[in-house]
Image 1 (tube, rainbow, N blue to C red):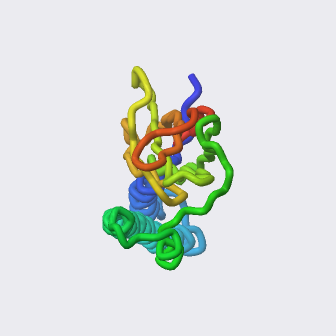
Image 2 (image 1 turned 30 degrees about the vertical axis):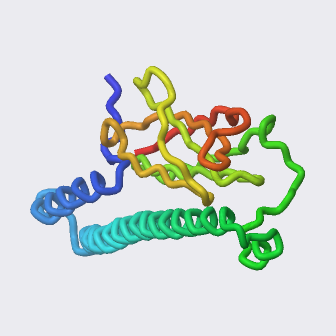
Amino acid sequence: MAKDDFLPRPDNDLLVWHDQFKSGVLGNAAAFGLVAADTTPITTDNTDLHTKITNLNATAATAKQAVADKNTSRSNAEKRARALAKRIKAHPAYTVALGNLLGIEGPDSGIDLSGRQPDISGTDHTGGQVEIGFNKLTSDGVNIYSKRDGDVDFVFLARDTQTPYLDTRPLKVPGKPEIREYKAMFVLNDEEIGIFSHELVVNCAP
C-alpha cells in the first residue's frame, strides 16, 4: 500500500516534524554511522527554519493588523466626511461652486452603473487569507459576498471602499484546502446598484 509523503506541507507542521527529525538523528547518529558532516547541516537547517518561519508569521500578523487598522481609519474618516458634507449641501448658503471648492461635488463621468458589474480578482495567501481586488468605477465601493464548502448560498462578507479587500477568515478545517467563491455588487449612496460580478473561484491552500 502506497504511503503519503512523510514531509508535512504546512510550515508550522514541518517545523514540528523537523524538530523531531533533528532530535532523532542526533540521538541515533552512532547507530546509523552518521558523522558531523551528516548531522550539522540538519541542525543548521532546523535553526534557519525556526528563524524564517517565526519571521514570516510575525510579518503576516503585522500586515493583517495594518490592513485592519487602515480600513477602520478610512471608514471613520469617510463616515464623518460624508455626514458633514450632507449637512453642508443642505444649508441654504450652499452652491455648486462652494461644493467644488470643498471637493464634495462628485465628477460627472457619464457612466450608468445600473447596467454595469464590478470586475473582481482573487489571490490566495494561504491559511485562509484571500486578497480580493475590484474596480469601483464611479461607485462608492462594493459589497462582497462569499460561499465556502458546505455553504448553501452566498452570504454578505463585507463592504469595502478601497481595493483590495482581505478576507482573513481561517480555514474551516485547519490544514485542509478549501474552495471559496466570491462575487461583488457596486454600492452608491449606501444602496446596491448594477448587476453582480462574475463568480470568482479561489482555491485556498493551507
